[in-house]
Image 1 (cartoon, helix red, strand yellow):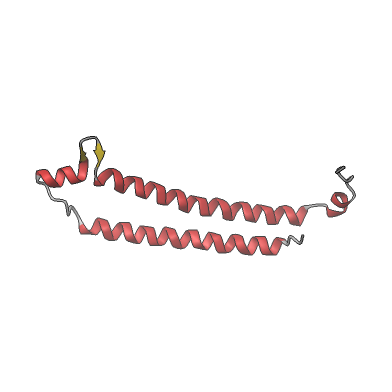
Image 2 (cartoon, rainbow, N blue to C red):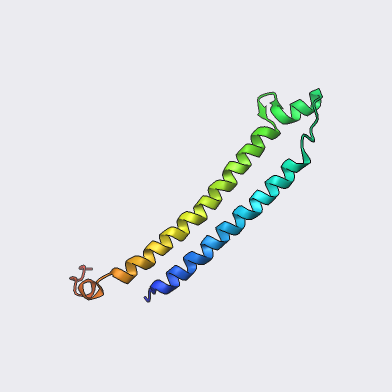
Length: 107
């Protein structure tokens, strides 16, 4: 099996860029939605929509939860990219001559 540090690092860069693009798009969408303002209004129906009713969450909780989840996905991209980069670094510094000479594991 061939493992090349340059390939790992290249993929790390691609995944990091995907995470950056996702974060940029997310910020733009949230700003656009917030730019609409208080579209639910201040009447009783609007407050029920925003706060929820009968033990069920409303728009506020769903909005905040969705944003939290989206940010967690962005953080996942960042962590995967970082770990791929580290894998590439480890391949670069591995002493392959020593690894090849390790005893074989019995079958």
